[in-house]
Image (cartoon, rainbow, N blue to C red; front, side):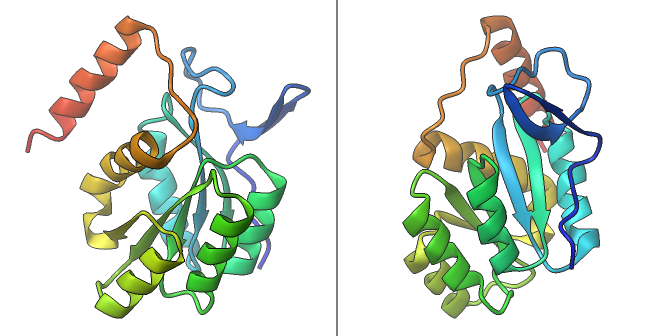
Length: 176
């Protein structure tokens, strides 16, 4: 299955292909770069739509339909975080390989159902958290922020006004 390029992909000499979202505050290198690995294009699109709402902090740089594609993409484009579906036939091995060859990359497992076996296998392979897809709309962004602030090597630097605005919108969106 071909790898879907980011929506409105652009290239420049100092920047890898990225999603053009029209946010003036989103400068090259100032966002966490996310790779989505899931077998269903509709789910990848749903995750992209959720994350596009936080385009000033998160940039979806690629999508893959299986673990092998995810590994290859993570090797060829700069990635800070991988969202790995746990029900892929090789998700645990792909997670292990990504963490072994690119230790700076943070991996979050995603799944429609929680099973202790998959959870424990993904954590043992190097994933830092596990998100149920039914919770994605409310917890995906929060989980990425927590994982990247706790385990990520890339530090975010925002002007105080922008940081204050994000905190306010984050608090408002998670008040319920």
